[in-house]
Length: 243
Ligand SMILES: [Zn+2]
Image 1 (cartoon, rainbow, N blue to C red):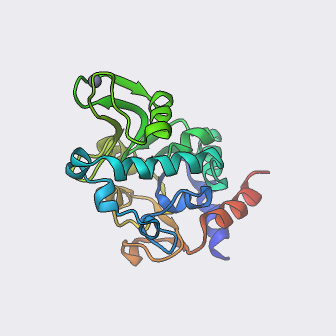
Image 2: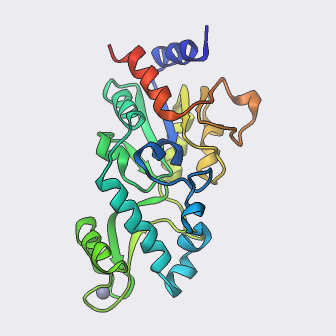
């Protein structure tokens, strides 16, 4: 049996899959990773600046330049095969919760319903001065026009994205689901960002890693590691499971 045979069997036997996804699932959609040869470093963007809340308050331009680039990229792409495969696993009742570290909103676009965006999202934004709420379409228009969006009161607008130094969202709920899972899938994450990276430790079930490259997780706790590009894995799994 190869690793796909084993994973296919795990999925068939499982009734409670929890998945954690990271940047590796979205690179095929053109969203830059923080690391790797196509990482955002190579675009001249320094993540420590882009996502640092103190830096953002002093100078929001790097963050919004990153955001504008992401918006432009997403206009020309969409959910990947792996996003759609995970939505399919939920649709057939296998996958109970999807936790993502990504802020690109692609899981929801792919049709996933039960999603915890642990690092937040762009769906809602708030004025840091008066608290007025903006939805993404309004803010998007401002970003594409002027890069940095400002409220009608003059205050800076910040999306509901989790910056370095801010608390993550929904971790406790994610942990409860991890406790109940009989199969935990790590997809496109090297498990280097806490606390999301801790979630697979809470699963009493099988742990399967789908990630090109090594992960920061004890080898003895990994049942299968498919060290391959997410899209290729999704293609193979779709072929096997979606009959
Ligand atoms: Zn305002």
